[in-house]
Image (cartoon, rainbow, N blue to C red):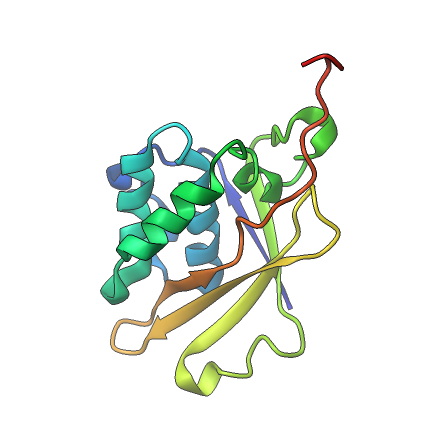
Length: 166
């Protein structure tokens, strides 16, 4: 099964995110897409990105460890989250085309923990040969899906620079 989410714009803060249809979190791909959107804003505004990730984590919250992990992964690699948007490649410096389109897919093991409320979606990066995972958890009382854990910040191919001496 595949899921495609199209975002006309990336939210710049939590207020903008909450105004988006996807912020209902009624579908697992909504939480997954907004996670990538929040991570894409991190290099521009770390605090706003963390507030959005906190919202996406729901009752679990965003731990100090997770904040540090994200900060560590962004050292010299601010392009990684942009690589998940369609049209984003090393050759174009991971600049996605608008509207921002992300396609997620399930594999045969994605629903192994669904009875416990977990679903794992996969997403391809324009800079990697293997897909990355994002694990989501549903809250049955509200029907919402929240970010449980993400494996989106692993290293990918570096952007191709127009200047070979850069």
